[in-house]
Each structure stands twice: as structure tokens, then as C-alpha cells.
Image (cartoon, rainbow, N blue to C red):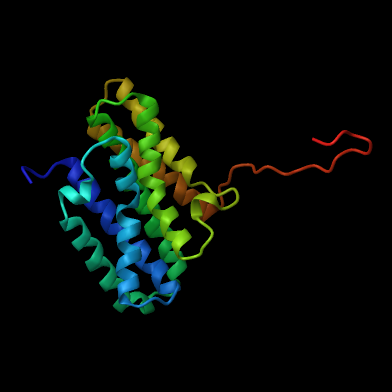
Length: 214
């Protein structure tokens, strides 16, 4: 690596924390250590891989394979310590909130560095933040957090990405804009976990007698 940048730091932090959530999910599914490593790596690099593929840039962990080493170490650590946690699911939720608050700014930063317009910046922030956890939950046969009824998850990623875009439009430095992004994501996600903040959900109404079917 020619020099350690803010983008590198965001990617490493995202890989580490998302890998911890993947390993916690593997512990809940009672997998062996290889399963722990697989789920941890899948969760850690899933969002960034899709982001880089869409933007037609070198995939971040291919450029720096040490990322996989970080995820592997996290998986092994959780394999030997997960039993010490009072609630592995609660720990997973909070680690996932932290990972989301790191990964979304990472996606935003990459899109900005590629000179993309604000719609692509929003989408890349959401993809980087949400896809790793989605893959983790699907493979572990759990209802994905991003799809749980009324849960603030993708909304947090969208709000954070939008916050960064708005901050940038006012001429704020990129580092400060990314900090705003991370803060918005974490505060909204933490509020959803701790205080039950929710969005309204669709509720179907029974058809009126004699009303035509749609």
C-alpha cells in the first residue's frame, strides 16, 4: 500500500466489526470454526465487494488481502469467547449498528472518490452498509435485519448517506461530512434498538362489500 488513507481505515474498521457480527451469527447457528470464518468473511466483505463491482473498480480486499486476515482473526476470537456473552443476539445487534455506521461512510467515500453524482453516492452508501448483513442473515437462515418489520436499518443507511451529501453541498470537508454520516446512521440505528423507533408499516384493509377486486 502506498499510504494508509481514511478510506483504508474505514474499510478495515468495517471489515473487523462486520466480521464480529458474522461470527456471532455463526455461534448462534452452532457452526464449526471453518463455518465461523466463512460467515465472518462473507459478512465483512459482502457490501464492499458489490459496491466495487458496480463501480467497476478493483475489489478492495483483492487489492489488500490482509482484510481477509482481519476477518479471520475476528472469527477465531469469537469462536473461543462467544460463550462468555450474556446475550449473543444483543451483542450482534450493537456490533451490527457500529458496523453499519462505519460501512455506510466507507461506501459514500468510495463513490465520492470515483466522482459519482449524489444518487450513486446514496446507493453506494446503502449497498456497502446493508449487503454484508443481508448475506449473513440469509446464509444463517435468519430473517434479515434489513427486512424486519418496521426496523430502522436501510433507512439509517439512507439518512447517513444523504447527510454526507448535504454536508458536502455546503462545502464542508469530506472528513466532517463522513463523520456526520456515521453519527446519523448510529443514532438512528441505536434508537431503533434501544427505544423501538420504527417506520409505519403497510397494513392491508379488508375489501368493502361489493367493492371490485384489485
